Amino acid sequence: MLVLIVEDDERVGQFLYRGLREEGYKVDLCETAADAEAQGLAQPYDVVLLDWMLPDADGLTVLRHWREAGMSAPVIMLTARTGVDATVLALDSGADDYIEKPFSFEELLARLRAQTRRAHTTGTAPHLVQVGSARVDLRSRSVSRGGEDFELTGREFELLDHFLKHRGETLGRARILDRVWGMSHDPTTNVVDVYVRYLRNKLDPDDLADNAESVIQTVRGRGYRLRPQDEFTKQDELDEQQEHDDE
Image (cartoon, rainbow, N blue to C red):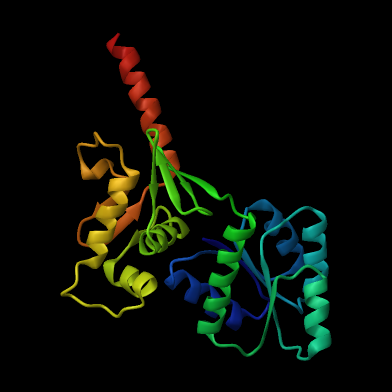
């Protein structure tokens, strides 16, 4: 997941930047309204954390300009302002959520997750996702591959959703166990490996010969990685070129 932080307080900005990076998020950081206006339209951010008070303009002005330009990413306002009037003003200006300083990092993470879920269910994010040769429908929680449809169980969907949010990143078993099952690390359980196998059975082609070619790769000694879609596109191009050379 790609997050933009707009915060002029260096201490707060670095705290958020480091904390979100440690949680597996990809993060960009801006300190001024001018930089934020340009950066917010330069990338398709999944969520934006926007400070109300910036040195060159207030955050609400930035937010209004974003919305006028068609930027639809969820925005969470960060501010020391309190009271109903401030909350109403922020939400009416285009914010999706509002959190008062000081706030706990755990609460912020929960709000980020909530905005991501809302984006999936409201259509802000595409509900059809290509994963290798399979197409995943996030609304119906189903997979279509090779003319067959497969339903995902609740836990399978949660695991796949977690992989999709961190596509291309290597996720350790302990982290997956914590995020998807809400369990602390247990060296005796193989539940993560079992459910990865379940997902592979539904996502991978039937004639797959090697786990290294699976949509969910095993990274030895580290965990699992959901391959970005462009890796499959590049492989298809190489295969086509090889077939052409063989003719």
